[in-house]
Amino acid sequence: MNLTLETTTPQKRQAHKAINNVLSLTAETVKVLLIDDQQIIGEAVRRMLSPEEDIIFDYCSDPTQAVQKALELSPTVILQDLVMSDVDGLLLLRFFRANPKTREIPIIMLSTKEEAKIKAEAFRYGANDYLVKLPDKVELIARIRYHSKAYTNLLQRNAAEKRLEERSQELSQALDNLQETQAQLIQTEKMSSLGQLVAGVAHEINNPVNFIYGNIDHASDYIDDVLNLIKLYQERFPEPDQDIQKHTEEIDLDFLIEDLPKLLSSMKIGAERICKIVLTLRNFSRLDEAEMKPVNLHEGIDSTLIILQNRLKAKSDRPAVQIVKEYGELPQVECYAGQMNQVFMNIISNGIDALQESMDQRQETGQTPTITIRTQALENNRVAICIKDNGPGIPENVKAKLFDPFFTTKAVGEGTGLGLSISYQIVVDKHRGVLLCKSQPGEGTEFWIEIPRLMEIAKSESKVQKNLPLVQPSAA
Image (cartoon, rainbow, N blue to C red; front, side, top):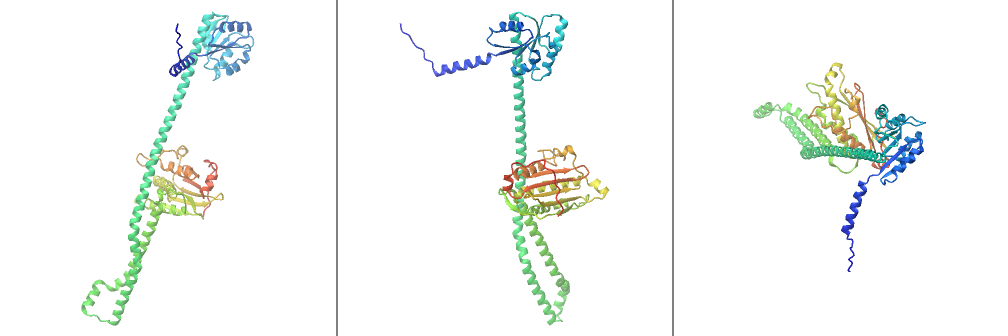
């Protein structure tokens, strides 16, 4: 007779392993805790359940330790005697239901009494089942498995719901982060485009203005020479012929000689003004510089005010916004100049908006709309910039959300709700600084910006506290 030895292939071994895993998952363990002060009852129930391989039995004869025992063992079913000498069974049941960790565990009450009133009272206090002891073995095991299965399903459902809720929160947070990042990218791109536009305009204006400004002095010298020559002719030939006399009267030569130098002086002043504006535009347009460089923050603030000059001027329906500068002695600060200019732009623009919104009330009181800008060098190698307006102030519920992305109190289409959020990220995340807001309704709003003078100092600090006390800078 030929015997054939069957070899186990890797595929079969994998299949057997998968089947065993499924069996281990479907074979649920039932953990039973019996609470009864009669040890004979405990031994009887132990004998009933010991043949069942899927049931783990534990016994507690001291009802005063029952809750602690349940917390240690985490049973899937509790068998509890209704009448015990030291503790009332219904009171113990209430303790179980009052504890969050044991509230959902199925409890089967055991009692020698079968009155309907007693059963109803047990169910009223939270019992899941009621059996007269000693119950039939088959019935007891069936009920234990039923309640254990229901409890296990409840735990699995709760765990699944919790995972689903956590996943939902993660997805919601991811969506919010994606929308915030997208909006910030759009805002950054807008500011970068603005910087490129301003830089382009400044470059195109710079060349012809320099040409004009550089030749005004030469033109002034040439005109002085011509005027001196005319004066010399008038001295040597005081009696010109009739044609020259007539033309001299037509062009009003005396007025021309007097006004032409003034005209050239005005042109020179205007050209100098344009040169300063071009320099300001070029300073403000450093929005796409990736490197951190030592800069003069006062120049950045001044360039921002130049850009916002049109909004600061008086209009037919409102007075001008007064700017008060109280600059301290600031050293060169290592920072991203363009990004700090963006912070100044956002905060000052919001101050102008707040002043314009309260213009009607301000006209009644006669108070001048004012924005005060103070700077100060701090002792810890940091610098502070304080921007304060005397507007209507910010309520507490609004101030709590001030730096949240997309939060705005402006009408639809008038604000994105990103200005202060981006400013906070620039100051706190990019420069490891502090950006705080101090405001009370009716007392104006004050923004405190604090950044390290050198980036090396910022890197040496483990973490910047966001809730630092607001220190008022002294007036320059």
